[in-house]
Length: 147
Image (tube, rainbow, N blue to C red; front, top):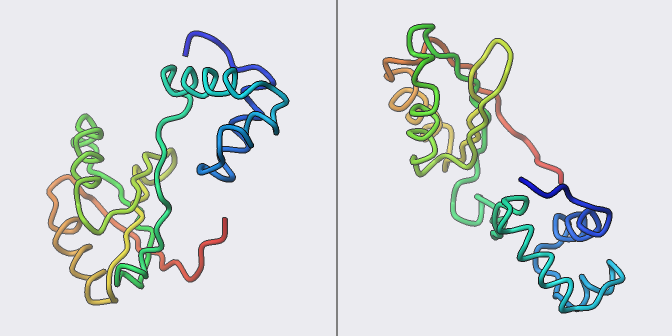
């Protein structure tokens, strides 16, 4: 990111973070700028990588994946040189919602959504416990997610 964000960019980003479907005219009004200026600024934020994308936030339960969990994963010390590869592998799995590379005792937090506890067990056993790079896992069930 070569150009730092200014106060107007911050206003745009705050509003888009709350409502990514906000119209350009409403966004421009909130920031106190012309719609054409707003459109140019948002495009610039996308081009600079500040805005990484636009997406729909879909409830996994609506897709029949009612059980969600965070799985903490620690890799074997000798596998740590392949951290990025492991993260990419995890991101490609259908059950995976998000992959977080973290600091601390664990290397990754993997947010998964499955139909039920059997699906979660199978995911952990087949994709994590059986993975040669994985030293240990800890599964934490998510009861509720509040934004």
